[in-house]
Amino acid sequence: MKVFGFQDVSIELSTRPEKCIGADQDWQDATVALEESLKEKGLSYDINAGEGAFYGPKIDIKLKDALRRKWQCATIQCDFALPKRFGLTYVDDKGQEQQPIMLHRVILGSLERFIGALIEQYKGGLPLWLSPTQVLVVPIKDSLRDYGIKVKLALEENSIRTALDSRNETLDKRIRQAELNKIPYCLVVGEREAKQEAVAVRKRGTGDLGAISLEQFIKQIREEIESKVT
Image (cartoon, rainbow, N blue to C red):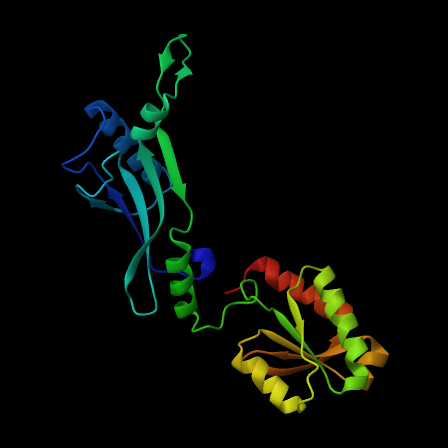
């Protein structure tokens, strides 16, 4: 969760509910194993008594959204039911057949819920590495469209999600639209940039950063994407 910028995360160990299936020893062993794993990782947690699934205890990881509401997302859950239903077995080190316990691991939880919380967290201005469009290329005039396409293709070859805005609109209007769409970077290309294989860089929330070579921009943005700066 912290990779996505959620710093306020809580962990709960949900234990055996009143109505459940499975042997007492399985429940005890599974609960102890989950608790020991939390202790081994040095993670603080609360006991959520009686809130485990009917088929096994679980670890719930909850985040708080921009309105401080708690949402359950990631979870690690023991399951006694499915191995029995599927007739799953393995042979132990003594040559005896045993029934395994299944672990469910959910990384993000409900994608709709997680994405909703993520968008609220950043007020729509997702960090560079998460943005659907990471860079917008804006040629100053129609005669520079071919260079704009060249820039776009060079970025895409480096796995950078890029769009081109060569509409017959004023430059200011297209830059303003990029800001409203919360695109992290806007590359303005004119005659000078085309001659020098360069781009004039504008960063969301910062403004004009000046012109640099296309090669240098690609290097810098790749480093920023890979570092997952939030």
